[in-house]
Amino acid sequence: MLVTAIIAAGGSGTRLGDEIPKQFLDLDGKPIISWSLEAFSKANEISEIVVVAPLDYLKEVEQYAKEAIGQRLPFKVVPGGATRQESVKNGLLSASSQMEWIAVHDAARPFVSPYEIDALCLMARELGAAILGKKVIDTIKQVEDGIITKTIDRSKLVAALTPQVCRKKDLFMAYQKAKETGFVATDEASLLEFAGINVAVHFGSSFNFKITTKEDLIMARAISGYIKDKFNG
Image (cartoon, one colour):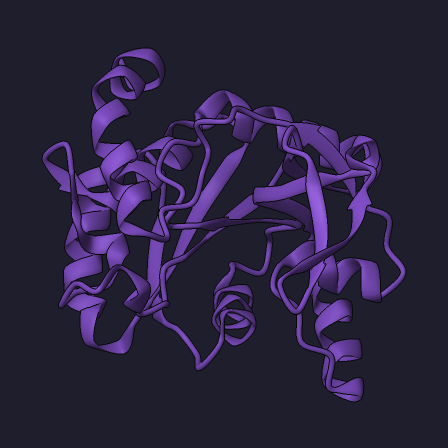
């Protein structure tokens, strides 16, 4: 497969309350983003990496990428947009012309493994598009004005993770349809669904959580040593 990995690192990460975006905070001696860069650079199915970064951090991200990826894969660093959807599109437009597939990953999910990346790419090649997902294990309630109105059947619910992999031409088409209608999505699978493209799910590790809150960061720092030994050697 000819796959471009787009690492979405263009957000401000303001919910953590730090002075710098969360993807650049330290996690076991290196920036959070570096974990994803290393994992994708070690995946057999990935051919290049495009990092979408905040405009004010392009030089820093260039250095992080050099240190994390080394000579394993070619990479580019490009500025993000006002929204995640716009940022990923910037990455999509920067993918090399010979690449046929796109794998989009949130930089704030540091614990994805090269094995999961490869397995997901192979599933997408077979079925057209696929995402990493996690089964919902909690009981889910629908609430209105602080009162439970319904218990949702969780047997059919899946939490969407990243990476999310699809054909580059399909994602371009989905972006065009979204532009024509004003549709805004929070992930690539939503864009593909909106464009009428079926998306499969590969169930991944619960370690592949997104660092959003201070509690997430504390948990990530608590388990980072184990993850490094398990997945990165």
